[in-house]
Image (cartoon, rainbow, N blue to C red; front, top):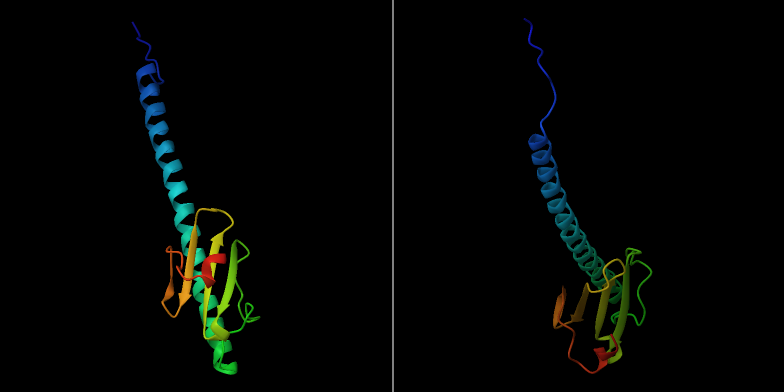
Length: 129
């Protein structure tokens, strides 16, 4: 007598595959959210660093910081940049905010903090940022 062999997956095997795929999917969703946040932070920091370079270049030509964002600044369209020039052009404060993640905000308060930081400047002139 010939025995017939059946092929295919059992229900238990299919359930294990579905559970493993669900776990992998949930991990990738959380990793994607964290990736977007890191990207927004890096983008805002990069734009503020570019602004600082443009402001330094403008100061080298005019001996004062400009009152408006220099034309040489080529920031990203996904970052909103605000500038306040202080004390007759001897210092400035800048704020960068991500349009994709509105909670991502960084500041530059030159000469106190030339690198982008999450700490809002405490000076009265910079309070409008």
